[in-house]
Image 1 (cartoon, rainbow, N blue to C red):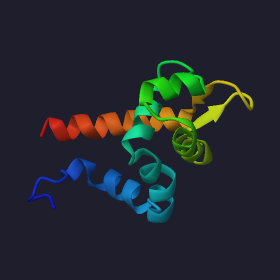
Image 2 (tube, one colour):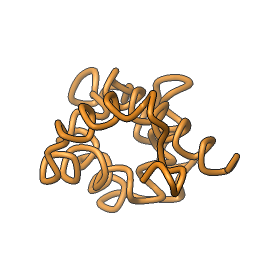
Image 3 (cartoon, rainbow, N blue to C red):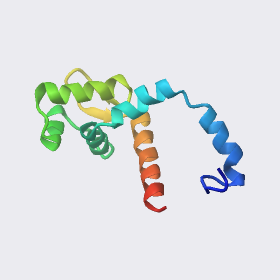
Length: 113
């Protein structure tokens, strides 16, 4: 792996420790699946700046009623966002924001190779 320049010797121990702790089933269901959809990723991005109502999210995404609710429910179930009250604003959670930051770092690193 070093010869392919995938990682260097200094990082080898740290990367192995991080990689060994990954639980694939949990990673896919709690992180990858929720953000693997363009609309949900867009919603997270919009919520990272400020809270939004259902109507605001509908206007920004172009999704209506049940379609929007389906995607919001996926983000709610995985703890990426919260709803303040039954009819309240949607807000991003620390998990959702950290996920966006991680994706941004990955994207930036890949783009600069």
